[in-house]
Length: 223
Image 1: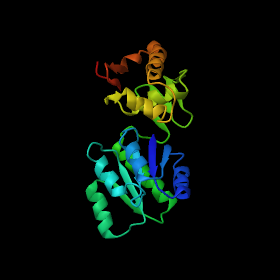
Image 2: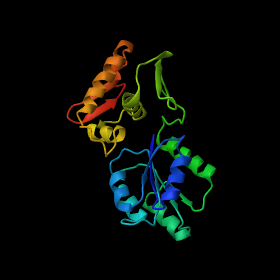
Image 3: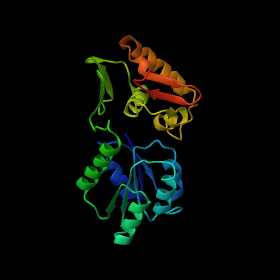
């Protein structure tokens, strides 16, 4: 799971990322322009969004995001008036918290949103038929037999399984697993997916990993 934390106070941003380290992988953004770009890449499972930001404010980011994305957004801001809360919720925020806040409440709300918008969310495990993921250890088993799937190969498989029946464009998969600042070329995705298929084939699970020609990949039970 990936969470984008948009907060211009670097110390607070770092603290929030640390609070959520056992829930998901976090990306920090400190200004609105960068945050809007990242949010529009459609690679995050949740966005925590401040309102008062340099460059582009949080309300504008939310409005732009809702034009083509349903990624859950938790607004976390010092603006605590009813008017601001109503505006945020009407623009499409899924939850609204004000500063200062309690650590346990933030974690609980984040986990609630992830459960609500991702039926396959579990902070500890993911399951598909006889395939089980240990998210904390990044290990995969089929019928309790450990698979030789590690590193980015694991990340690809977990992301596809979590988003089963959804076409994941190759660019989106690359940005999700390798990140925007990677010097690696996109063609590496094909190499990793090909290797993943070889590992899954003896278990007949390769059939669920489908290539959508000229687009990307999809984990699907539909043949």
